[in-house]
Image: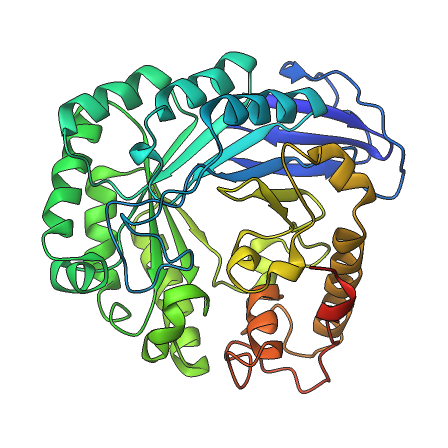
Length: 387
């Protein structure tokens, strides 16, 4: 399904079948999808509202993964009360958000996850759900997933059995496969998310085989040096490994032409990120405690990067008026200019990685391990952002 949201600059065209969007200069000819109501905006230099919002439903999880950027575990218990989560979903719809991306923790650990997502679907939001695939009652959970008619369901697969279990806990791979088989048998379209790290770079062939057997799409990510991953720095790829992995994924993509492969570790040109960065410009993130962020990783890097908190702050007011968000956007623009001035931009590199640069500036990393740019990095003044 296609969605078009009018903007001062033209509009946003969102394709729910691909879970992707374009910012257009004008409404497409012969448009036959869903045309959203024009939203009022106090500014003409940014979109009237985020296109997509990542909502971290809770920070509790039935796993305690070594590389979790959110440090989630079964000890986590922080979340908005259900009525507030419902209000947030309704508010995001009201301001013109198209895509709600539900994450965690593990969303299915929330006692009212079905009701909250069902409300989002009832309102007409395009909804995706990211889950680890570990369920106490597989049949019951898969039946609930089926009833929700999600626009996208993603599960995490981070290596062959031994590797996946080392990262996520003994027996997690077998439980994931059991759930994946049930999901596939139920006719639910499935995307696999795989984090690239030093222990699975030689397992790409078997990963593609598994993903192709049960899913229709694969998405490969960098391991972000955030949260518990900072204790596992040996998992981070080197520049050489990164290049080798990019080439191998390109080769395997040709071998599986029916599989939709997305690769955030690919070059910036291939990902279409040469003109803008989504974070804070087309995407906003809401954490489990209602705090609002330009980028979901930042919640676990510095609380000074919080742009507001729901329900005390409205997301549309934060979007248009937050000083923290404005300063973050300005810093990100300077990062983009630095990247585009580099002769390697869009070739061996993946483009801008704000959270990696933040990790460097906080002293968590000595350097941006994915960057070959020798130009100085603009500083993000944390002290000026507020508490």
